Image 1 (cartoon, rainbow, N blue to C red):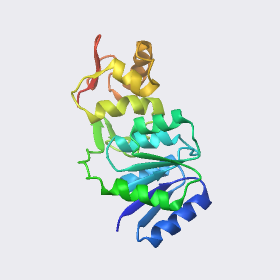
Image 2 (cartoon, one colour):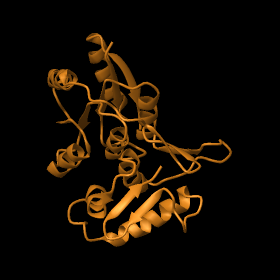
Image 3 (tube, one colour):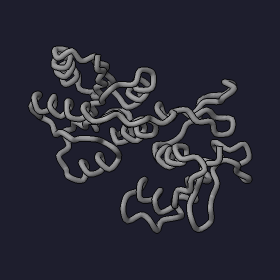
Image 4 (spheres, rainbow, N blue to C red):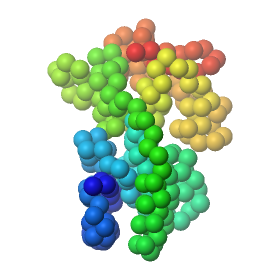
Length: 227
């Protein structure tokens, strides 16, 4: 059966979607927040995700970033936000489609069938080791590879900076690209943002932050991840 993950904090919306999807023989899983959604997707990868952007713990955009760190699963945003800027941000983050609430169920089902017909891409690994830390890109978690310390806390901005590097080991990611993807168009000149955040990431992830072995700065160019 085709597995659909519904991510929404409105019980009535979840109930309506579940009933309609199960009536059409879809296997349905649900998550009321971003954290649960990423964990559920990691444990049992869905064939498609229906995602509300207004979640109680993290913005829905962060769910898209988390999923795109390791999978090309189709994501349809179902949101009460009709602002064109919100739609553009979601699509730029990697969503496949955007539907504004309220919507006709027949339209959602048609859009779901459309994204499921697309050829599946080859997914990338979701687990990367960075020094003593084992980073799960799907769940956005970092735990000690020895299991002897508490999980590491990274902010959403730190995840958005780290994920492109870990997905592309040894490849240079330019500073302008990182600034544009994390802070949006117009932020390409704010290189001080990167210095501040990468200093913090090295203190969290590198055994010797003053002499990093994994999060490498290429002066005047950008950054790369050396496994």
